[in-house]
Length: 323
Image (cartoon, rainbow, N blue to C red; front, side):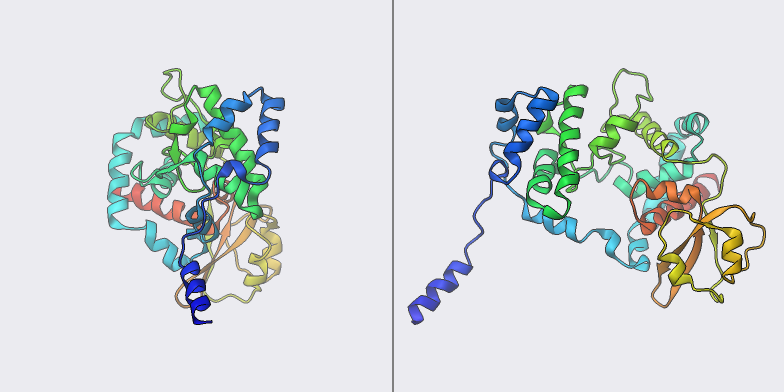
């Protein structure tokens, strides 16, 4: 009996057997789909995945993103003196390109800079995971979002073919985002732009392309030039803020309706639409009204924490760069 217990204990200590991506459910049907719909060579496509294995660390990361933190902890990741100073230097260096993006797309440079600062620390942290491996893991071994990531893997392979890139050589984040602005492949295909007019959409090496592509994305997702993002609410109000915030990030309340709920909103037009944004502090919560431009930022990353970090970092960098 003791020998059996010892053997079982040793068995538990063994590493999990490798799981080849090419042996996962739905892999074969994906290859068939790519052949039938997009005329990919199935033999060459299978060869791309021949030595790739499911990454358990990627699955662990996707299940606990930074946006699961409370606001007061999430904010500390991005609102640092070093990141603000780096961002101010970036603004100075690329001021002309940022202004050109504002003129063409109407997007505030502070928001573009805020996104690039949050996403990759201005190109310092673009990820080091092979994109075929990360997307393959999530497409075939992560059932909760497998459909989404199979779609992104399809977009990635199409993007690589269109842009004449070698898919096995491309790296990015554990979730499949790539380049300085961390675009998913579907966003790359739809919104990336050749802002330096060199004939390529290069989000890995061209800051003009990265800046223009972020502005292009926001413009296409409803950004309104010159309109506000947020309105801070008082700490003490007689209104059901938690219930209102549960309605989501898309502006769905008219200011007149929010006044009827007990909010005093001086200076805001009755017909302006807003969402109630609730952010957890160490003690209590902050509450804001989020307007359409704030919602446009959440289309980049569906999180109020993300959009607020982009906004506050961008404004801090603007103050530093222009102060």
